[in-house]
Length: 108
Image (cartoon, rainbow, N blue to C red):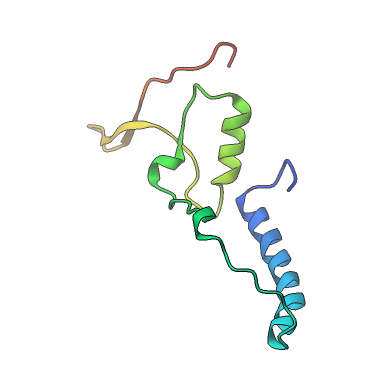
């Protein structure tokens, strides 16, 4: 992974790596030439599904963390957003975004 990779570029790299791995592995599986190792259930873990809250930027975090978060949730996924209290229509018909006040770390 390169420092300038975003979600979609990493996705493409993983697809390429998976194809190479499958091209090497599937023939061995087909011919029974593969060592099967059972998973230890007590060591198995699960990672939860992404939620809308995972897209909110927390301004108190260091800039490098925010930068990496934006990269991680970039196109084609919904992206990263500041936390909002509300979206309302103004009297003129325009949409108004009301943002939550942000706390930030010193020097940020």
